[in-house]
Amino acid sequence: MAPHMDKTRPSVEDVDEPRLTVSGAARRLGIAPATLRTWDRRYGIGPTGHAHGRHRRYSSDDMARLELMQRALMQGAAPAEAARYARSAGRPSAAPAVVAEDTPLVAEEAVPPSEASVAVGSASPPVPRSRGGGGATLRMPGAGPRARGLGRAALAMDAVAMHTLVEESIAADGVAATWDDVARPVLVAVGERWATTGRGVEIEHLLSQCLIAVFASRASATAAQPARPVLLAAMPSDLHVVPLAVLGALLADRGIGCRSLGAALPADALAAAVRRTAPAAVVLWSQISSTADVSVVAGLPVTRPRYRAFVAGPGWNGATLPPGVEALGSLVEAGERIAAVVLR
Image (cartoon, rainbow, N blue to C red; front, side, top):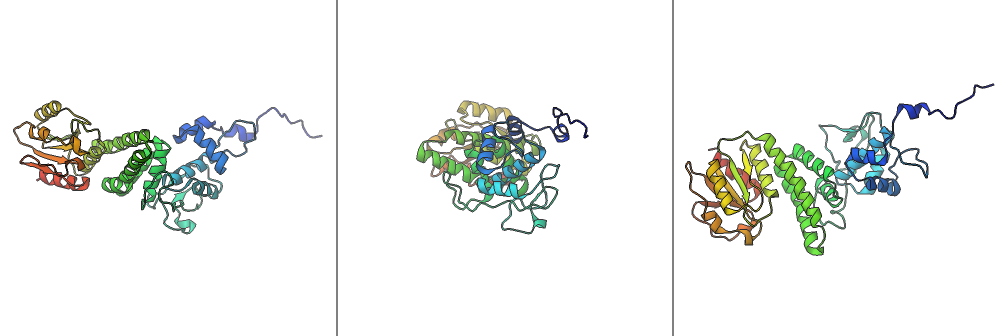
């Protein structure tokens, strides 16, 4: 007679592998629990062995599949494509999914498994490339996969995904390309969506804060503390500081340290900062013509040693500037020009 089996004891699999709740899995991925439930309900990317009426519990293999789906979404794939990709990877190994550092993150076309960009112990299919133009709710004609991924993360208000994607883009392509090809197209599209529909200002604010954090972190981590910094400030009535954060990162890559004084800096505070820091240069940003106050520029204090005064941003287009004040072009051109003056 077979020995009695104790049905109350957990199986070896239950003991060996703790499983995460929906909230625990969501925290690990940096997304909302509702997003996980949607992925399970709509696309079949959920916990294995889940029985109806019981709480969802995610194993390490389940988490690896979720990470694959999340990465595909961040690279611009549509949700259904990302789900097919995650499922087609087969059973992941116990080790978490990693991206090979020397391979592209997004496959242009289907490639043999040996050339796939994501490794999960065994060969996996390439990350799918979205063929849409930015989705139905965020128009970005001609945008690349990274920009589309950032757009989807912005619409989902997924701050973790936005941070990760922008940081990965900077590491792969540099600050200038990330701004021109990834960040700026999404900012423009979100702004146009807000102007057209009157909705989405919260998306623009969160995206702006994420971009400021990433580019400002790049600037502070790259540049040494200078004896004479470059002062960056928005005009007294101007609230747009994302471009200044980008400019700070561009200058930091050239070894030039900056001090960013933020948005809507009063004229008297700007003058005090100039006197106290003896900067090598001052850059004043204006996004719209109504904030481009020439009198503020003309009122900058004279110091010894002298500094170079620049204005930047579309708000200055057509403005008559005081003698000695130079208008800068694009952010990349601005970085090059300031570097030429400061480093000579």
